[in-house]
Image (cartoon, one colour):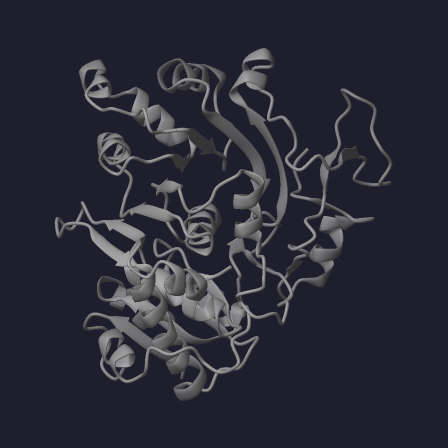
Length: 392
């Protein structure tokens, strides 16, 4: 499903809560009706005013703000590729990503005006600022006010295109083909993950990571595809995360091992202060988790940890806490029961257990990617229906 479906079914339900602790401006709640209306306005701007067509690209230089979610759904419902850009990058790196992804429009926050000014120097790219921005750029509020909150006539599913440093040289865009389906009937990667793990409208999800990374954004916005509620932190703070689990009655969350380490460093009195009983599952990925860190987290939170080994390109193993306690350090089996093989990188032959080789996974059926503008590296990543992240 997609946001329009839930806006019709549960218009007043809160789709997203942006916890804005850093700015001290208080949380911002967005209902499904508001998310639907505002993303419709933006989709109309992109398609009818900017003149983009399905397959066109836009880019976001934004933090964890509500406008990111609106842009995400505007792109998803109008057939566009959306590239989130790490706003910590240098201007020349931002320039490279904008150029490589072919972004016809760039959206950015006011406090990032300087880096965007330098990144777009000499370009004719359309730019929209959340806040003041550069002279001559459109303003977010004005753009939305100028368009009706009604879906475009030819809604078609778009896609994200994140950039990964998983190959040699400069980062590469991970591009999947557009399905051509209407968003209401398209089951994307995020929604399929939610279905595998049994999440639905009753889920309340905590996302403490930056939305310019694939997992935090794909999972957060997949929650809005299944009618759930996602709580997005503007930045990670260990005690704040515990407080949100209690206050928002979080049932599911996703972390990286560094966050676990910072949580464990909290004083025991602080850890004991918060009621975490609603918390049913804590996913973690993006880096190997030290055995002692994970063991301590399981002792504290209970056997609710689920670990992934995957990348933006796909792949994925998973392991639940009970399995991990029997095999500490393991990252488990293929997450949907598919094939994992360790192959000789030179010959493609299967390696014997205990031998070194590249790890290959069954490719996801709805995530058949290519490295944008890099056919050679795309070919290297695929082998007879399997895909590798390049890990030995």
